[in-house]
Length: 356
Ligand code: NAI
Ligand code: MG
Image 1: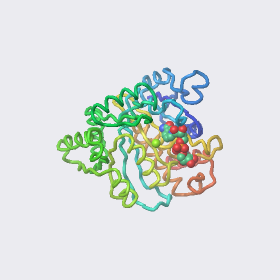
Image 2: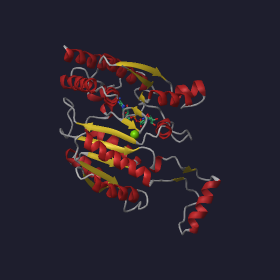
Image 3: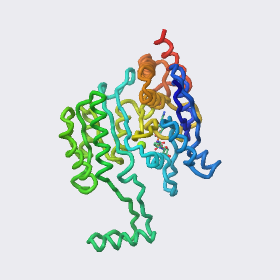
Image 4: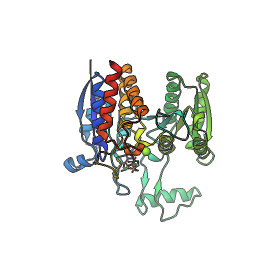
């Protein structure tokens, strides 16, 4: 059987790391047919849109995509392609494993946790009012009538969290824990301050918990959770987080196990799945062959598993571990001098060695 996969090279280091991942995935022997689609800076230049409809249609057809990072210019009014993609395809769950890897020395050798991030709501819903816009003044008047003063010179970003949005990510997290043999979910929140958004998220989780007696649900305030993660990360299993906290702690957890160059991820909905690393387009090293492709390669392994190609996924993960354990071929972020395609070749060679 041939699997159709949409491939979005992305911006910055995206094309370099997606090419490396494609090379490795093809070496597994799984039959993959790639539909390459441009999004981001290049699409903007050629077609006047960062996320052309054609790209969305293509993903809807293939149902799965491997995606490189896409640059979001800061403060220019451009909506993030990444956020838009997650909304358009309703990819409500981001799954980001953080596991200590062989041959990658870190402060804690036995981290093995998974971040589950709600991916569509919260402060990333994109409901924003610019300072000075007429709507801002209107909202200010409403709030004033309710006894809240919002300064005239304030911009506003809203934080919606819904019952349905919370319930589906909570159920997803319990199902994920059960299917992957994990026993404990730690929900991070600030429900004492944001009672009707984080508070609702927590309330829904507590409502759902009795239906899942095989998995323990604990709750922790996000600031305390941050401290605990840097202090005893090995005690955590699954982290369940609203969007913003999930974004921040994903990078923190990546840092715990060797950095962004290693951290893989998936964006999942009921219908579609887009696999991409946690990292961004890394403009500081783009185009120079310095990027570590392992995060993207491991995202590719998650894609294979999603397609039901478990043996190939296991083989890719084992090959990456093998290369890291040997320590001969490492990119600069891991203290080596290897280039992006050196790593791709080393992982492919490890795959072939394992098969012999
Ligand atoms: P970043 O993750 O691109 O880079 C942060 C630091 O990590 C940089 O020093 C970079 O060189 C390093 N780094 C990242 N990936 C690496 C890799 N594979 N190998 C070696 N070093 C690596 O984060 P930053 O700089 O905040 O964002 C850059 C752009 O990427 C922004 O426009 C941002 O919006 C976008 N972005 C896109 C994401 C996506 O497409 N899903 C996710 C995160 C950021
Ligand atoms: Mg991020």
